[in-house]
Image 1 (cartoon, helix red, strand yellow):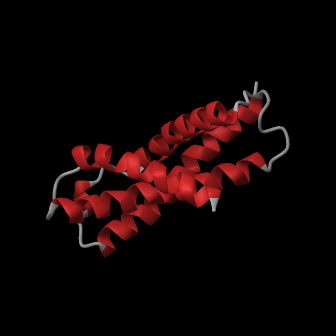
Image 2 (cartoon, one colour):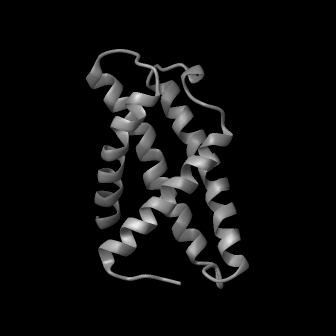
Length: 127
């Protein structure tokens, strides 16, 4: 339940940013639902991508950090595929969204921010 709450709050905070960045389609409420769904794909699925990567031994040391970064990128591509499918189901046009590779970049940035916030909140700092 904690994961769902954290990722829902993150998607709610992300929605206004996406609303400004993406073209408007319908009413403000409908657009907010659309961008929330887009953001939630990244926050929820991205969390599970990170959890899967953290299960790998040595992922937090040396070369493992680069593997984790590459894993975030690859996971971001999959999150974006799901988000784009949902975008179509919501009646939106795919031409409104940036290219597929930006999904990987977006998840990397999102996970860096989420991990930073989580470490500060928990009071733990990993080296």
